[in-house]
Length: 261
Image (cartoon, rainbow, N blue to C red; front, side, top):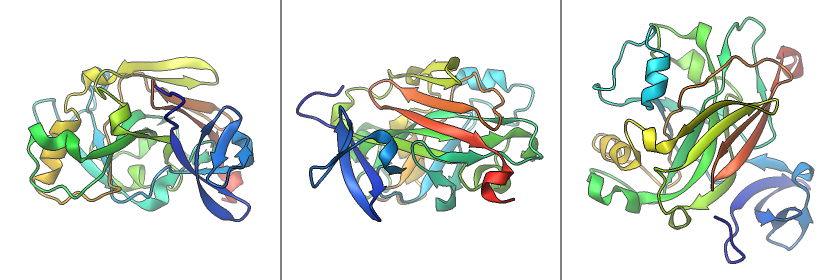
C-alpha cells in the first residue's frame, strides 16, 4: 500500500507538544523534519476523533461463535452503540484489565473515519463520505455483559479499552476496504484471523443506516466489528491487531496496580 509518494500519517506527543507525523523507515518523521524511533514518542489516535460508533456482531462467523449468548440475529438491523472519548488510547499504550474480570478479550476491527457531514446518505453515495481508515482494538469484558450479548455502558465505555492507530490511511489509498485480511496475535501467536469481505453490514450499508437517523460529522469513526477468534487476555500479554495495508497496532494488557487501583 505504501509508496515513496504516500506516507501513512499519525499524531504523536513528543517534547511536551502534539505533532503531526508520517511513517519513516526509522519510525516517524515530524512535520519539522525530525525522525524519531517508534518508542521515543507517545502515540495518539491518528486523527481528531468525534463520535465513536461501534458495531456488535457484524461478522457472520463471530455471530456463530457467540450463538449461545445472542439475543439478535443477522436479520436484525445493525447492533450499534456509542463510546466515549475516555475509552481511547493509541499505539503501544496500556489497557487495564480489572482484577475481578474472568474473561476479557480483544476485538480487531476496521475503523472507517467520516470526512464530511453526512445525513440521509444513500448506499450508492456512501463511500464518498469516508475520509480514511485505521485499525481499532475494542476490548470487552464478557462477564460484565448484561442481557447476554447486548453491549452496555460498563463494558464498552471503560477507560483505555479502545485502541486506535497507529496510522490514518486516506480512503483513496484503500481501493477496496471490503477485501482486507485482518488478524490478532497474542504474544506472537495468531489467535484471530478474518477478512472484511465477511462483514454482515459493510461500510456503505452502515453509513446509509446511521445517517438515516443521525448526522455524521467529520472525525466521527465507525468501528465495523470483529470476526471470530476472540480469546481471554491477561496482564503482561502483548496484543497486536493487524489489517493488511492499514497498519499494525500494538497494545499491552496491565493490571489494576498500574492505575493505582
